[in-house]
Length: 452
Image (tube, rainbow, N blue to C red; front, side):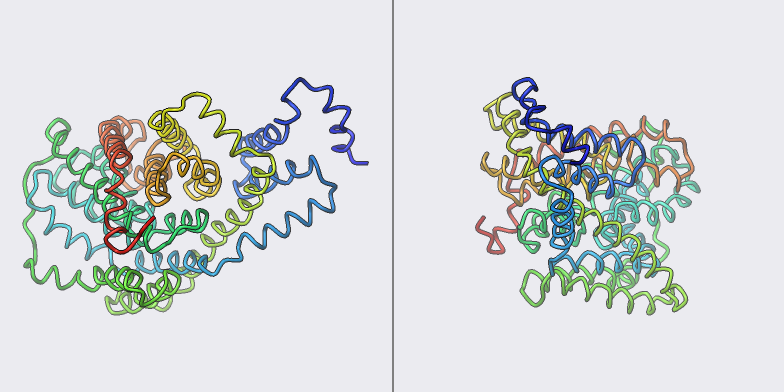
């Protein structure tokens, strides 16, 4: 008999206070997960080990090992998951292939006539590059690294410029193609095609909200109000950026019109990015091994989290945690609006402490059934969840986009956070709008044939 068998014999459980025995799996799961995370254990291993201990409460070691092995394998046994490594590789190729500079030049056409023009250019370029690369961090680094020196030359306040870069880079995670939307689609069993379409308007709304914030707070934070003079003509700048922009037409057009699936589109994105990078003469053959290694490392991390999260999902279902959390929230209020407010608050808090991928993997099985019960469409809820988590990566203590943005701009975190707060409020307002008006997320899918 193992130590765990001795500790959790039926007589021991019978002597527990009422309800504690039923709650023991949930307690073990969350306590061990918290302990491992506080110890600094990588999140994929923390998730897997805590799930292992939870299942170990009721099964012998040999059966637990078999269950864990099966779920590790089955969690990755999905053809649609091939889209993740391909889009990650395509994003890295774009980052090295000179797309960022051409998108910034094109953004100058769109935002160059507004007061505080370079700040608006930063937002528009982040929206475009973030959507193509599928990474907010890559957008913050690539766009911030190019626009930052231009802003310094024109005496833009570094802390506010950094805040704009940080606040706008997650908008590309809502605008497809987006790796995090693919992840949500896999977990929720929703259509990647329609989920991609549902992200366009909320992502644009997030970016436009930040631009409104620049107009409102620009003078207060001493942002130069002069407009940009283009070095090249509008026509020439557009022509140079057109191949990069046309990638969206190829990828989304092919998916929406049924020419190829999202998985096939990801492979096409890799080929197109390669061709474009070599055509721009900024991607060299010697760059490919490093780019490939970076992509493999990132893919391995994401896939390992997906595999261990499938074990966690089984453990949570076995421990009846989703229904327990649902009962707890429903006991607090029966009002659907209050319940959705609570879910949003929880997701906002989770986003400040946890990366987006594990958060989607862990909390989608918990909150999606509840949202469906309240009549919230799965596509709409996916956008709500990703929008909340996007805000989280801009905020301390674990805001990856915030730390990268500060590192690129070489400004102190504390001064950026102060300038970020007004933009954070605007992001919350746009989040409320997306929650309150389902049509923002569902209009494009519905006109494309989505019936819910």
